[in-house]
Image (cartoon, rainbow, N blue to C red):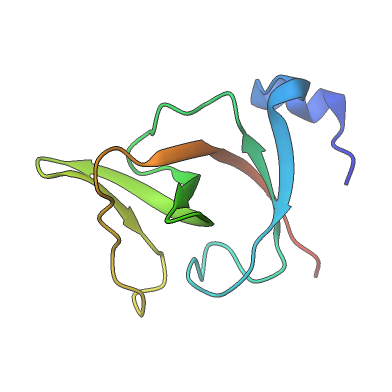
Amino acid sequence: MQVDPALLRQLRVRPADASMIAVAGDSMLPTLADGDAILVDRGDRRGVSGAIHVVRHDGVLLVKRLVRGAGGVELFSDNPAYPPIVPDGAPDIVGRVVWLARAL
């Protein structure tokens, strides 16, 4: 999927750091649905609390909401049917999700 350079400028994402990936599964419903396309800013690996990120956990890429607390970082699904994930140590953040495309 091609991303309009004007959109990248508006989102402040460098073209070299932009990746489009497809969401698989229902763990982030209702925010993200299976098949949604998300734009990931791989240049933003700060781990913004409350924001949605792509993280590598146990060798698998996950799309989760990152929350920083007194006990460290937890990865939350927006779907309450899925329990939080508490990574051992700092999570391997691939990038922050900055945009969503969805077919109607």
